Structures are given as structure tokens and as C-alpha cells.
Image (cartoon, rainbow, N blue to C red):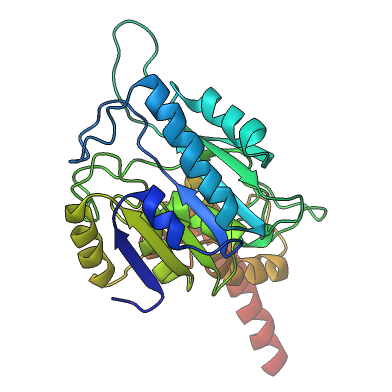
Amino acid sequence: MDKMIEIKNGDALELFKNIKDNSIDLIVADPPYNLNKDYGNNSDTKSFEEYIKFTEDWTREAKRVLKPTGTIYVFMGFRFISYLYQILEKSQKLNFNNWICWYYTQGIGKKKGFSPRHDDILMFTKTDKFTFNLDSIRVPQKFYRSVNNMRGANPGDVWEFSHVHYCQENRQNHPTQKPEGLIERMVLASSNEGDIVLDPFSGSGTTLRVCQQLNRKGIGFELNQEYVLMTEERLKMPFTGFDSIDPRMERVPNDLNDPAIREEYLLNHIEWFLKNHNGAKDIFYKEVEAKYGQKIAKEKSQKKTIQKSIFD
């Protein structure tokens, strides 16, 4: 396995004991939601009181191991999200930063009540001095304006990423696999190359896979031995691009009318927004062709005419 990546089989509360105080730059946690899902270990069938105590125990350890500049993102379902917020803010005295809504287009259908189409992610930091790399996670502007930062805009706190569907090549045998693009944003925003990222509920290994490709040191805890073996195999697979992307990353700004500005921007777009998303590049090229193809062709034709007249 990659020397930068380590996955440990065992109970998270026990494995936390082996992590030094103030040693982790980022924690990405996707604990069981206590909704009776089958993770092969009965970890999702606790009583209310047991689950609250479990949450208090593991978040206490998470705070202990985080560096003062560290950040924690925690996924949580609707039944316990309010309790988790109280535990992080009141019990652990972490600093609230964002309540992120992960919006997806497909989910469970309901006949009485509204069908769920999002998950919640809480972002807390250990202190008010924390790592946040905005330039690494910007999304393309919708319009070109001279006052805009063409490196892109802040993505906001509503994130659209599709589920990893069962027909996708990267789908693992795990009930709650998270999209790589979703985790990529957290890792890029809240850590730097060489930093240590901990996932105390590693599951299908998405966080470790993302860390592997983004040059971070990844540590995963996983209770189910089968998921550990599955993750080890996943980490050996060749990388061709992350399995999901914010659809805004593929868009081309309108009103790029100045040829010099447009050329400079289009040269940078791939590096800025699609570096780890090879599958989206063709969509981007088609968007460029649809918006500016005729304009670019006309400009090239005019340029050739001018050059010809100079040398004739």
C-alpha cells in the first residue's frame, strides 16, 4: 500500500488512543447514522442514549487529536444532526464554521412526506485560526466581469454532487459510499500537501483514496475487516479521475468577448477546475465550442487576413 496511506482495523474509540494530541490537520468523519443500515458489525443499531454517548466519546477524541489549526467535517442524518451540533459546540467547545448541505438529485422515494434529497455536513474548527485554501476550491464564474476574480467564486454551503450509483465503475460494496469529488473539496480546502487527514469511520475508503491522489497522509479506522480489504484493493487501482464533480466546474463564463482575456482564461480552466476530473474535460470543450466556436473561428480568419495583407 501507498506509504502515505494507512488503514487500521478496529474500533475507532480504541484506535484513537494511538493518535497523539494535536497531531491531525483534518478529520473527515462519516459515522453510522444509527438508522439500522447493514455495515456487517451492528454498529448502526444503538439505543438513543448509547448513540449520544458514542458521539460524545468519539468527538472528544477527535478534538484531542486535532491541531490548533485543524478542521473537522462530520456527515450526519436528520435524526441526530441537532444533537451532533450541540455536542460539537457545547460539549467539545469547538468553533462552528459552516452547516453544509450536500444536495443530490436522486434518493429514497416517499409517498407521505417529502423525499429526502440532501445530507448535512457540519464543519467545525478547533480555534479561530484554521487552514482554509479558498483558491483551491473555487468554482467558475457564470459571467466574465472585470471586477470578478476569474480564478473563480466561493462554492458556497450548498454542494451538488451526484451519488455514486450502483452502475458506476468505482462503486464499492458499501451502503453509504460518498462521492470522491465531495471529499476532494474538503481535503483541498482544509489541508495542505503532506498534511495528515484522519477518517475514523473509513467505510469504503473514499477519504483515503482522495488523500492518495492529493498527496496527503491519510489514516483510516474501520471496524469491518471486509471493508479494510476492499479499501486496500481500491487503493491499488489506477487513477483516471475522481468519480464525481460539482457540475459548475464544467461551465464556461459568458461574455468572454476579449480574445486575449478569453485565451488566457481557457488555458487556465483545466488546471484550476478540472485537474483531477478527466471525464469532465470533453464536456468543457463542448461548452467552449458551443459558446465561442464561431467567434474564435472568425477571429482566427481575421488574423490570417491581416497577416496575409502585411506580407503581400
